[in-house]
Length: 613
Image 1 (cartoon, rainbow, N blue to C red):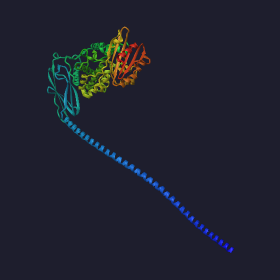
Image 2 (image 1 turned 30 degrees about the vertical axis):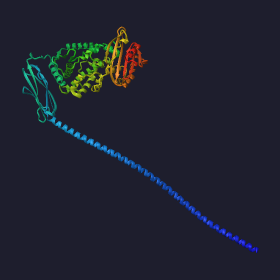
Image 3 (image 1 turned 90 degrees about the vertical axis):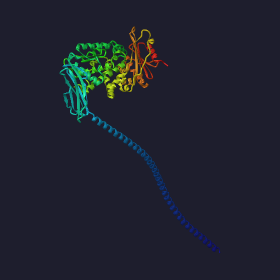
Image 4 (image 1 turned 180 degrees about the vertical axis):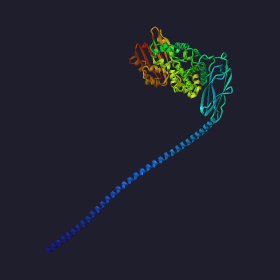
């Protein structure tokens, strides 16, 4: 029984072991399946994660593409707006160009109509010399100066006297033709000189007519005394007609010997040296360092007016003198006649006496002299252009009334003062002539330039920008007894530049004088002490111009006196040397230079001109 129980127990345990074994096998097999499923799930999860990452990348790429597309769309829309604007502007430009083209077409049509009208006109002819009404001596030859012009070309020019043909010219289709026909009347009579021309289309001009009277020589109003007498009269008439100014009655050329002409030149130089513009030249030269104190200005004027000349007009005596010559004057001599004849016309019609009377300042006199000499050069150029003289040259020969070679040893500022009208006047006068021909020059004489600034810068004259009026107080009470006003004048831009150029370089001078607006200077002298005080008050176009001058001027006294400047309580600067002082003060658009032997005295002068607030 006991063995059966044990056996049953063993069987039970065995059965239980088998169940456990079966359960283990079942669980092992289940676990393996679960592991396999887990591995499969992990693999699938990894694939899904990879797919998700790729999807995210694709989504990011798609988003970037969308952003780029949006930007491109915005840019395209902006470009479309710009293109629309460009299209509108282009259309406007096309419209404007179309209007301009229409206007140009109308202008061309008008010009063509005007050209046709001009071309339909007959040729123009004129007899320039002799003038109508002239009285000739029997046996006296005269040059008939004629001109014919036509834009289509002149083919023939016919000259007749008292209906008898004298000369027929065949210019060869020239648009401008001039000629000189010598003529000597055979008997006393009234002669009618006629001139006609025919152009390339066969159109005949109107007739130009001049009437002259030929009388016996004892009845004529001018005997022939020299080879150049008749010629000079012809030139006078030509210049009068060319310049469009009448020859005054009672003024004619006098043919004189070489001795008489030289005496006249000496008298002219002496009168000039004693005239107002030069009587104080020594004092002005000393104050501005232009020349040594004892420089002989009269000798210089005598030297430059002693050169050999064939003609001389003297405004002081209203005389035109011609040098007596055995042979007919050459072309250059005749050109000299032209220049002096211009001066005669200027003096008689406008007046040149003011150049020597002292009515004008130094600056204004230089400006008017530049107008006079510049106009004379312009007329000479036009005289040659009109082919009145057989002289072909690109440069007008020097036919001045002064000997410029005599200036080579003169102090530079003085030489340049004498040369200024000749060197700067022609450009000024030519500009006016080019703008309005001779009427513009007439207007310039009616409203003459007031300063060398207007000559140097013609645009200022054209704009009517004249110099400022600068005044100075009476300084005699400031200076005290023994002092007297010796000179009051205007230096001007040109002579101010000459003053500075003695110690400053060219660039510094140009900058310093730029913007000059006006000035006035006074010189007081003390005869007992033999000294002077100079005060030069300048005004400028702007405060910057004044500052530029004040910045550069110290170079002058520093180099002249060999000393450095010292600041003063009044804000100025003073330099000492050679027993004198030079002081500079600036106030906005004003500068003041004073010079003298006593510093305290100069500071009082500054206070009188630039009073402190």
